[in-house]
Image 1 (cartoon, rainbow, N blue to C red):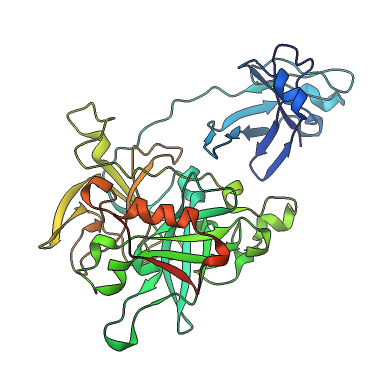
Image 2: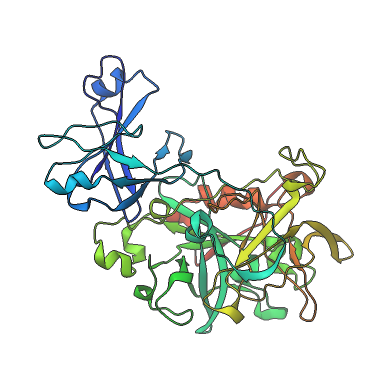
Length: 415
């Protein structure tokens, strides 16, 4: 409640527009009326910091998140600043985003903005180790705990961008949502599931259903979406369709708070508001990356991330140049040759152009590997290569909650 973003527009007086406040651990919005919005004609916005006098000498971080009418979302990088020690004298401190002063309480004290560092692309080859950079991917990726016959299983999932306002969409692997069974018995969706973001920061010693062990708690999906081909073939012939989506209502009732919510009860319980969703590229194809302007093919250098069960609850990753492999004669899988992550990481994101703030673009998921040698396979999401990944995403995006029978949707009419 100490941050105020104001449009400095012609005729807007002392501000206006949507005042969007978003800090680590808290979010608050306020809206103006239509007349004020029409007056906002400037591209210049001013960020004011107020009420920081009790925190003299401490350091803070902020970022600005925006959502347009089409639900497209963007956010700035985290910025750091330190409250000047002069605030200790009882003067109300404030500063704008340019280190200027914003009035308050009989005087103003400048905050010192920390020097901005350059974001670095991550290019180190890694076989399997703990993710140490934190950032966006750590909070947007989480453990999926799901059940068949009352028995728990573990996978990984990632919050995706551009979902409608009534839902959040989680990308994972097909086998993390639907169990193929041969014969008359038939396959089935998981009985129930939990999505637990940032579980690496749990207070527990392993994955469990105790949501207040985890910083952000747990969310219960409403249903899952898988491809028909995944439901009719067993491994390894089903690997081309080993992707799925869980859909979570943007409703506080489907959330059980974590330990951060106990200290901040007003913190949002809507998943996409409390983490930063990641972009996914359904047109990306190996060797056809528009951002690749280097003989070393940085666009094809890929990070695979996930919650390997043998390292539970650690958040692990591997990183190497992507190649391909025919796991079965009829399908050329995407392949991370040196990756040594294990079961539990299934469904975790494959990302290109990953930086040290945890940003990147999702292009596949962890799907399968060999039991006795390194390597991780992932399905090709590119629509032009015959993938149904975009088609399934659109069904997850557009399905009416009340029309979904049972625990999921099997899509059999993708072009």
